[in-house]
Length: 66
Image (cartoon, rainbow, N blue to C red; front, side, top):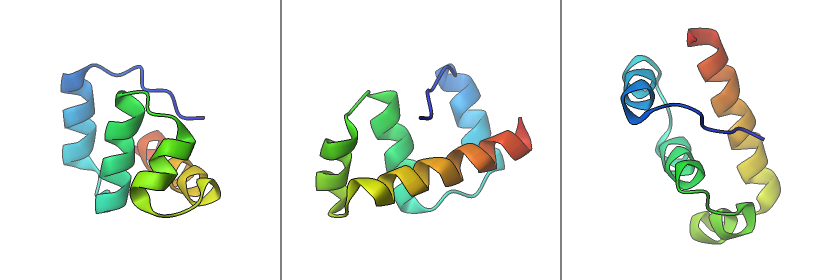
């Protein structure tokens, strides 16, 4: 699972360099706030596997830049 060990400044820099979808941006904020996957899925009205897929996409995008 994607863990955020970035400072706010680093995270803002990453966000400025990478195009994230609105859902991915919300998931990044949820992860920063340590919200559980089930609660994320409820907020996004989707299932947990969709959240997991989005987290994998986010981590791949970040890995390309970092």
